Amino acid sequence: MVVDGIYYGLGLGAAGAAAWWLAGPGYAIPLFLVAAFCVYFFRDPDRVVPAGPVAVSPADGKVVSVHPESPTLTRVSVFLNIFDVHVNRAPVAGRIKEVLYKKGRFHVAGREVASAENEQNLVVIEGDGTEVAFRQIAGLIARRIVFHKRAGDRVETGERVGMIKFGSRVDVLLGPEWEIQVRPGMHVRAGSSVLAERRPG
Image (cartoon, rainbow, N blue to C red; front, side, top):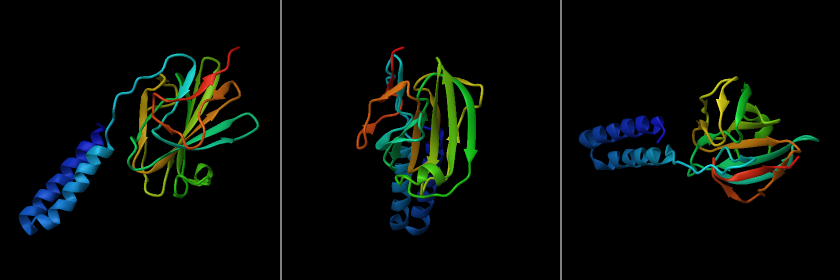
C-alpha cells in the first residue's frame, strides 16, 4: 500500500471514532466507509514485468485512444477511474532525460482535450536507442500528481515512479520503432500489460 493510504485511513478512522463518541454511529459510519475506500484506493500490488523489447503500460485503466500525436509519434491514452490502481510505473528501461511539469485545466480525464489542456507531468525516458515519453495527467477530481524520480535517474521497465491521486489519465508517446499491441476499449495493468513491441532492426 502507498503510505498516503495509511495516513488517510488512520485520519478518517480517528475522525469516525470521535464522531461516534460525540454524535453517534450515524455520523461515524460515513467516515469509516471513506477510510476503508482510501485504504483500498491506495493499494499497490506487485506485478510480473514481461521480458523482452516491450513497452508496458505505466498505469492501470482503460485504453481510450490510440492516436497519431505527430507524423512520427503514436499516443496511447489510458484512463484511470477511481477504482483502478493509481501507482504509475516506467514503461521502458533507461535514463530519465527530462521531467517537465505544466499547469493546466482539469477537464474530465477521459476526454481527448485532456491530453493538451490538463495539468500534467511529462517524463521522457531514453535507452537502448529509443525515447519513450509519458504524461501523468490530472483529471476532474485528481489535483495531485506525484513523481518520485528526477532527470538523470535510471529506471527499469515496470519500476514504480509515482502516482496520480483519484481519477486521471496517462498518455504514452511511442515512435515508429514500436508496434502498438493495444486498441481502444482494452483494459491494461501497470507494469505487466504490453502496450507495444520493439520492431526488429
